[in-house]
Image 1 (cartoon, protein in one colour):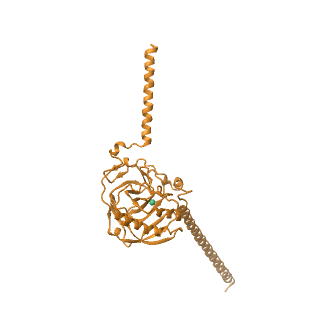
Image 2 (cartoon, protein in one colour):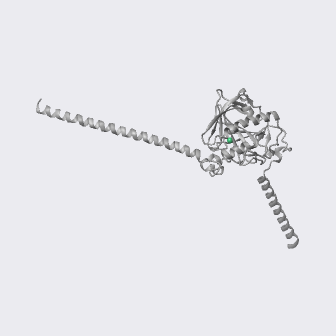
Image 3 (cartoon, rainbow, N blue to C red):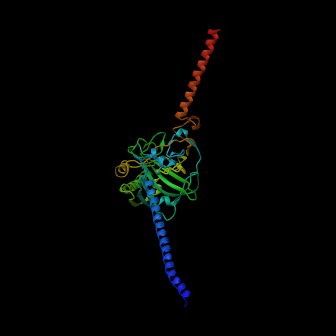
Amino acid sequence: MNTRGCRNEVARLTLVPRITVEVKQTTNQINAMLLMYHQMLHLFILILILNNAIASADWDYGKHGPDVWKKNYVACGGKNQSPINIRTKCTISQTFSRFELTSIYYEPVKFKLTNNGHTITAVPNSPTPISLTGGNLKGRYIFDSFHLHWGPNDNSGSEHQVNGDKSAGESHFVYHHAETDQRAVLSFLMETEDSTRHQVYPRNRSKAVAMEQQWQTYFDTARHLMEENSSATVDLTLNLLMGSNLAEFWRYEGSLTTPSCKENVFWTVFRQPILILNYDFEAFRDDLFFESYRGPQPLYHRQVYRSFLNEKLSPIPDENVCINKSEAGLFFDIFHQTTICVLHFSFLAFYRLFYLN
Ligand SMILES: [Zn+2]
């Protein structure tokens, strides 16, 4: 090897370690970047989880109650909100198809009851979907769960009201459409013998006893779920939990009654209330949550329909008599002002005619 060749060899030998060091440095940088990326991803996921946790904890029925839900959940301030006060005189009679209940409604189904921090949810553990058709609902709806709402005493606790009357509580059987995001809720007002409205509806005694016992089974299990996220399993028969008259109800379009308050619910509020024992809700108030209901929301432009012909409370055709207080007040105000104006101008005309001429 000559001098030049030797110099090249020396240069080659010194270049190799330099390249190796540079590759190592690049690899380290890539590793560092990957590590940082992973850390950021974890942080992002953590923030999302925390955000969800905060979102689910930022509403209740006390300090963060229904009056302020719309601050965090815009839909809660919408114009199609639920529940409502059903003014029977303002409902319109309509023909509805019969609700079709499949055989599973008449069999005991395992339900998982869970304290979700706001109420007790009851989710069926059924091998086949529990579906619902009829009641003029388009298509097939799948049963998701049921839960209750209650209040500080047996004359306050239902979400829906009928002519301003409150019931002791309300049970919601929640469904979703098999193909769309649409929901349907079957709602039953609940009364105890201490409720003022408990005798408002005639009932079949034997069915009433079976229903009372079924609800007793539910309450005996649910009342022990004092801790949030605690759960238990119980066998329940849906047909016995629901009222015996599924033909008479009120229907309107509204929303979920808890945040997010999404306005995608067909509400069916049954006319026949469910009768439960006096101390059932008392145990809930003492052991679970003091109250768990949202008050009626404005109806605005919506129409409420009824699935029965004879509304005893409104013998006159409803459309002709349904003027709400504010509309009636406005009408009389305009009438009053117009009368005063007419009298005033008549007096002026009379005065000019007889005294100024
Ligand atoms: Zn509900």
